[in-house]
Length: 213
Image (cartoon, rainbow, N blue to C red):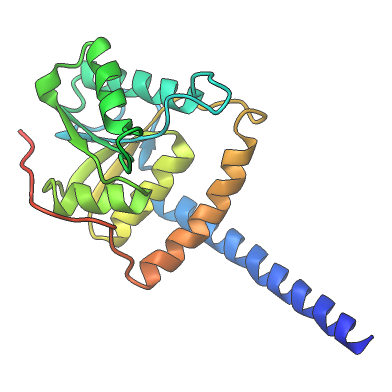
C-alpha cells in the first residue's frame, strides 16, 4: 500500500513540474517575442532574407498539409511585397525519398519567385538547426522567419538566445480542430527548446559556409 501511495505522489510531483515547465516556457516565448511577429506586409520591416521553415506538403491521408499551403502563400506574398530579397528554405532531407526544401522551392517558383532568389538548406531537421544554420552557414545575423505564428515565436526566441535579430511573418493559421495535435506538440516543443538552449545543443550538421546574394 505504501508503494502505491509513493508512486501516486511521485507521479503527481512529476506532472506538477511538467505543467509548471510548460507554463513558464510558454510565458517566456510569448514575452520575448512580443511585437516581433507580423500579419501584414505593409507593417513588417525589410530583411534581406526570409527564412522559410519547412514542413511536409502532404499529410498521411494524402491531403495537402494546410500548414505547408499557407506558408507557401505567405512567402510569395512577402517576396512580392519587396520585404525580402531572398528566401532561404530550411527543411528535412534526411533520405533520398524525403526532400522538403526541393518541393518547397518548386512551389515557390510556380508562385513567381525567381529560382536565383531561392537558397536551400537541406539540414534543417529542427527549428533550432534552421535558425542556427541560417547564421553560421548562410551568414545571416537578421532574418524574417516565415511560418505560422506559434512556430515563428519559437524560432524568434531561439534567434534571441543566439544573439541574432529575427522577426516573423505569420502564415495563415488553421482551425483549432485541424491543428489541435500540433498545438499540443508545440507546448512540449517549447519546453524541449528551453532545455536544448540551456545545455548548448548544436545543429546536427554544420559544414561549409554559403553566401546568399
